[in-house]
Length: 330
Length: 157
Image (tube, rainbow over all chains, first blue to last red; front, side):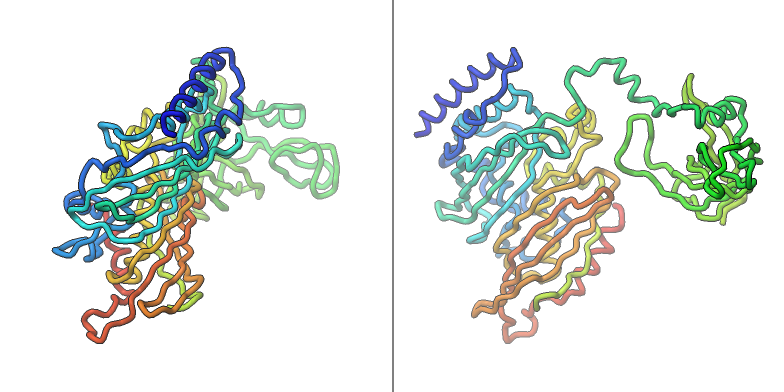
C-alpha cells in the first residue's frame, strides 16, 4: 500500500514539476489521489515522554498545573503533537507520500504553509517513560481555496498516537499550503522601493487648490461665497447651502485633538507602527485627519492642543501634520 | 458548573519570547516562528505563534479554571488572525453544555482568543471534572487561582 502511494506520488510530482516550469496548472485529481495515503507508519517519537520536556513546555505556556509535576506527573495533554515532532533532525519512519504531496504543491507555487486547525482527543494520559509511536494518514486535500492569506489547498492529516503500544490520543491537523496574496515572487527592486513610499495623494480639480497651498506651507480651507460656511476636506459644493462658489481662508494652524486612533495593525511598508492618527479640530471649526507627532502615540489625548507643521515625507511629498503643543498635556 | 457559566478572561501578552519559547518547547523549528527576516520573505510581517503553543495555552486556560483534577478529553481549535509579537491575546470561555456522569461532570467549553487584529483562535474543549471527593483537601481548586494567574502573566520577566 505504502509503496504504491510513494511511487504514484513521486511520478505525479515529477510530471508536475516539469509542467510547473511552463506554468502548468495543477490538476485537483492529482492532489486527491493522495487522500487515504499513509503519511507515517509506526513512526517513533524522538524522545520518550520525559520530565524536562514537560517542564520546558509548562514554562513556555506559563502553566503551573501541579498535575504536570512530581512523582505522579502526567504530560500536559495538549503536548500530544510535540512528542511526534521531528525537530531539527527531521522525521524518520514517515512515508514519502506526505513529502511528495507537499513537493507537488511547492512546485505549483504553493510554497507557504500555515497550520489552521488542530483537533485532539485524549484517551489516556502520557507519563514520563512512555515510548510514543504514531501512525498518520492523509485524510483530505481541499480544492483550490482563496483565503485572506492567499490561494492554496488545505491538507488534513489524521494521526493516532500510542504510548507503549496503547492508543493514547488522536490528532487531526490541517495546514494550508498557499501562495501568499499580493506578494508575487517576481517583485522587482523598484517595486520594493515604491512600496516603502507613502501613498500618493490623488490630486484633481476639486482639491488642487489644497495641495497648492500645502506646497506653500499654507493650510487652506474652503469658504462658501453664498453662506460663508467653512468646509474641509475640499469639495465642489457647500454642505450647508449647496452653493458652488467659494474662496479660501488660510488656517491659523492651531487646533485640538478631537479624536484619534493608534495604528498597530496591519503594518504598511511606508509606516512604522504604532503611530497616532488624529482627527484634529482646527481653531476655525473644521476637522482634518492627520498624524499627531512630537508625542508618544500612547500619550495622545482627546482635547490635546496641537499646532500645524509641514512634514517632508520624501522628495515628492509634503504633508500637513500636527505637533503636540509643549506643556499642553490634557 | 453549569451551561452558561462564563470563565474569567486570561490575558496573554504575546511576546517574542513566548512565541519562540513555545515553538521550541513544542519542537517546532519552522523559521516563521523564530526568524523575523525569513518570516517576512514568506509574506508575514513578523514571526507568529505556532498552533501548538495556542493549543497549549487553550489547555492551560481550561485547567487553570477547573483545577488540577480536571481531565482534558478533547481540544479542537481553529486559527484565524495570527499572534504577532507585541500583541495581547485575551482568552475567554463559556460552558455550553454539561453532562453529569458517575466519574464527574463533563463540560463543553467554547473558547475564543482575540488579539489586536481579530480572532486568533476559536475552539471547543471537552473537560471532565471528577466528582468532589469526601476529603475537602482534594476538592477541585476554586476559580480564584485563575485570576492570580492573570496578573502573573501580565508581569514581564
